[in-house]
Image (tube, rainbow, N blue to C red; front, side, top):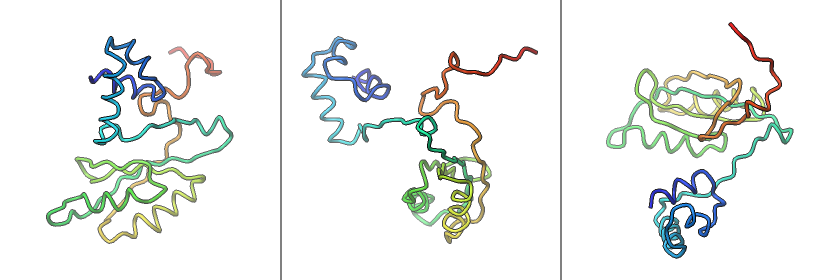
Length: 159
């Protein structure tokens, strides 16, 4: 059964017939498994990964480490959910270590990301500190290599 989900995770457009061929399961069994997973939330959604840079749209990404005060009985959950509702926020993770949350933010400009951090994120009452790391280049995301090495125009360097 997990093979069905692994195939869909790599290719959301795989048809039940293709999955049945790859797994050796019956097509009806694959369809029922997918339908059940969609209903119970095991399949959260189907997603298309777009390289916006190739389409001429620049994006600035930043990883923001956030130190927050956990709240009684809910810990970090309430503040993490609140932060995750901002449209600028792509991902929120609970961390161990010096900072409590890692927030992945995207914007059209560095100024837009900086404004989000200073005016929205840092202004939240539970937030006590942030450290921003702007991402210079994304090589791999969600298990996908974004730039094929064979298509690179850079000259190889030797030591």
